[in-house]
Image (cartoon, chains in turn yellow, green, purple):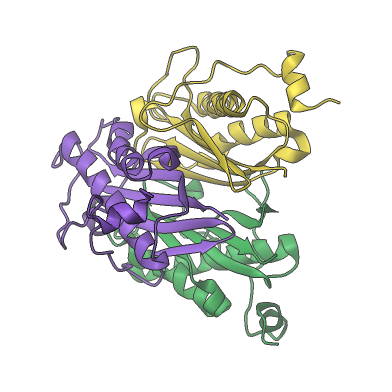
Amino acid sequence: MNTVDNRIASGEIKLPRPPAPAANYVGAVEQGGFLDVSGQIHTDNGELKKGKVGADVTLEEAIGMARIASENALAVAHSVRGSLDGLRVHRLRVYVVGAEGFHEQHLVGNGASDYLIEVFRELGTHSRTSVGVAALPFGAAVEVELTFQVAS
Amino acid sequence: MNTVDNRIASGEIKLPRPPAPAANYVGAVEQGGFLDVSGQIHTDNGELKKGKVGADVTLEEAIGMARIASENALAVAHSVRGSLDGLRVHRLRVYVVGAEGFHEQHLVGNGASDYLIEVFRELGTHSRTSVGVAALPFGAAVEVELTFQVAS
Amino acid sequence: MNTVDNRIASGEIKLPRPPAPAANYVGAVEQGGFLDVSGQIHTDNGELKKGKVGADVTLEEAIGMARIASENALAVAHSVRGSLDGLRVHRLRVYVVGAEGFHEQHLVGNGASDYLIEVFRELGTHSRTSVGVAALPFGAAVEVELTFQVAS
């Protein structure tokens, strides 16, 4: 079967090394039929590009950051439960730090949404909220928060 | 029975046309006993008043925007599942773009809370968080995010 | 048994008086196996220190505010259900108002995380998101939002 786990095993889906929680919490918690992953930023091989979308960061770069943050979230989920099978994406929140007057948070969010559908296909359909925040930990421009429903 | 669906059918409750998702996600997802509706802004018959509460938008207008965003959220929920019966409001989040020094996000949120209780009555009781964000998609001043518990 | 309720009864854990909701909603809702507590700020014996972290409020003070907001959240949960036993912390969100250039939202969040683990011990493990918002109700610097899973 062409499950997500099999596509990881075959190398079709490549997950990064899961980032460690930045503080006193865990990467993901699964209980009551839902898996909640802690907010993830776009750290990429240990490097984090800082700034505000529309000033130091272009829209295209921000879309890529939302994708990388989502990859990190899946890596965390995979490391916690050992599998991405049996998960359905339920809810996505995308937090974006933009320059004054930046109002395309929803386009940044597509970097996460497109990636989730690429990985989970029909199980990747999700509800979503994208908002513009004032700042994020470590000066990140994008943070992604994921909730999955777990097949029982 | 005087259910929400019956009150919609009788015209007592009027829902707007459900806004289409602004990007690559769906309006609402129901699984694991919860219905999560994607964040909704105050688009009203295709028009969106932009600005910051306390500057371009008055508090009274913002309360009305929270109500309209909630109407849009119920329209989306109704379009996805064909009914609002069997839903209990669980959690409401209200995101408000205010001018510097605006600290009445909770009063803006009442525009959403009051409407939900008007529609769902004793099933409309909810937990809530209202925060002031830096910006919202399309320059909206208010965004509303709803989670319902679904009667099993 | 050394449950949370017993530790409250013995005075080892001291809960403040639960703050009343600031508007038209309730303090907490329990349904579908989850208890969601409305966003809580750091009101302390009726007083609220206002300001932005990194300007009027130090990082150490903000960490204390996150702890107080969490104490308020537990007081609300306890007042709604009469017990904190049977709860597992599921998800924590920490909203922080910082001065321009403040990027240590995750350290502020530790004030909440550490307190939750102190109270709930191995049942306190949680997923978390910390973001920097533009403003909070009443001029608060920190707001905490908690979701618990309820043992069935």
